[in-house]
Structure formats: structure tokens, C-alpha cells
Length: 365
Image 1 (cartoon, rainbow, N blue to C red):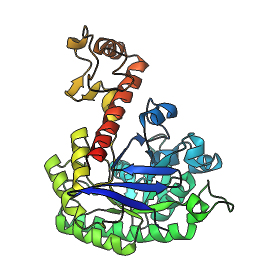
Image 2 (cartoon, rainbow, N blue to C red):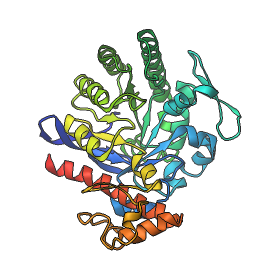
Image 3 (cartoon, rainbow, N blue to C red):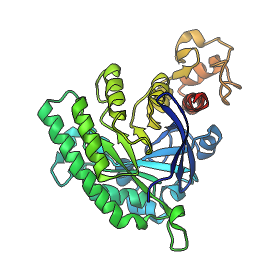
Image 4 (cartoon, rainbow, N blue to C red):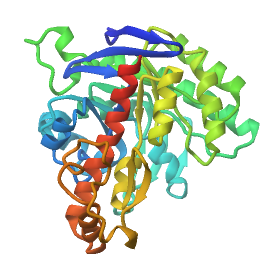
């Protein structure tokens, strides 16, 4: 059963729509905060709800290692475990395994890797990655893929893309055989209320012809939505945009389109205008922890001494709970004092700025 996705308005290449999940509707284009370990760092779930977060992203690799898939499944899946009533998307773990190049062994069957926590050995394959995501109970789950490093020669990119396509077929097969095992499903529920859906991932490095081939062959396998993966791995922003724009031409108009792990506020607005429906990025939370804040007047490094006596709001054009209450001087003091509250308030503002950016894009369509 395909995920219901209704496009309600168009403006040039951009689209405004509604993605209906088992845990509520998601208005697109949407920015998804990253909740790597079943938490958006520094944020409680009630604040995320207050900010208007519609969907969170969870990380299969990290949750597999701690607390473990069965633990989460037994506690009601991610929704029950983290007390989050809205939609969740989980990645397959492929990108994290890619980032552990020194700790992994790649074969046709899958990837054997050592935990960065304790060195213990683990194995991820298309089948085990999908089984893990079914156990986590996310509304949207991802096929297991291999992310190609950059730069890479043509033969390496081709081999990686072909492997991802073979893994995509295996991911789809396992999902179709086991999709009714989602932890929040029960026989009393209708099929619509226990729908978990699977997205495929387009790879192909920076080769536009391979991106076209990957898109066409992934669509042939048949998924509920399509993601553009393998970007933000060291290439220039201009090249990222070129690959995104070229790949979008080959993705179905009637399915959600997800650009993985990319974006400053300006970039996510631009990608939405190109026709991307879903985006995620660790930047707003990571930058917040380092005192880098996004405002309508540009980026601010709140650690700088120039803000020590600044009584003005962080962003005079922002209505988040931080900007309407606290001064730049106070935020600078918290950061300089290494207070935990600095990370909390900075994250609230940065997430609010990203979410407001996407809301403005939706309103403009």
C-alpha cells in the first residue's frame, strides 16, 4: 500500500503537499530535525511539538547499538519509547556504516562493522536493516544502501551504485514479507492505521548519467517514495545542487522526494523550490552546540565578546521563545559559562528558524 501523498499547489518546480502517515499528516515541503538516539539533542518532546515539528528522523545504526532494537520494540517502538505521537522516519544505517570506513568490511551480503562504543562486531544487510526499522516502528523507513565516497573513480561509483540497486531489491522483498510486524500494529487496527512505508535511495556519486540510471532502476523496483542520497560527502555546494537538480528530473511527480542530510537555511529553501519535499540535516542542532545561530540578519557566533553587553534580541524578526525573552548578552553569558541552558536555548532558536523557513516556503507556493 502506497503512502498517501497529495500535491495541493505548485509554483514553478516547487510543490506543496500533504504526506499522510500512520501518526498524522505531514505538510510538505518539510524539514525533519535529526533525533539520532531517539532524542533531538537538548530538546524535550513537548518543546518540539510547540515548535511545530511534524516528523523526526531516527538513526538505525545508533539505536541498534544502544539500547537495541528488541528493547525499543518491546517498549512500543520508537513512538512509545520516546513518547512521540507524530511521524518518524528512520535511516537505514548505511551512511553511518559508510562513515566507519576504518571499522567495516563490505561484501555482497552486507557490512560487518565494529561498534564505535565498545568494539563489538555487528552485521547489517538489506534484510537486517529493514528488520531493525520494522522493529523500531518508524512510519517511513529506508532501503539499505551504500554511500559512495568523494572523490571516487568511475568504476568505483558504478560498482557502488549497482550494489545499492541489488540491495534495494532485497530491501523491498524483505519489507513486503514482514511489513505487518510493526510494533504498534494490531489485528484490530485497519490497514490504513498501521501503514509503514519504504523509500528507495538513488545513488550514483556525482555522475549525472549514473544518477539517471539509478533513478530509473530504483523506480522499476517500486517504492513509496524516493530519496537522493550520497551527497554532502565533501563535494562543493555547487556540485551538490547540480546533482540534485539533475536527479529530480527523473523522480516520479506523484511520489514524495527526499533529499538526505543536506542544508543551510538558504539551501533547504532553494531545494524546496527545485521540487524537493523532505529534507533533514544535523546542522541546526550541531551549530547550536557550538554557538553558531541562524538569524534573518545572517549567522551569529554568540561566543564573540561583542555580544557581551548587547541587550537586543537574538533575531528581532523571530518570534520563538528565545528571541522574545532573552538578550544576546544573556545568551553569550550562558555560552561563555558552558551552561547546559546555552545549548538548549540555542537549539530551540535554530530549529525554530529552520522550521519557519520551511513554513514560509510552503506559504509562498
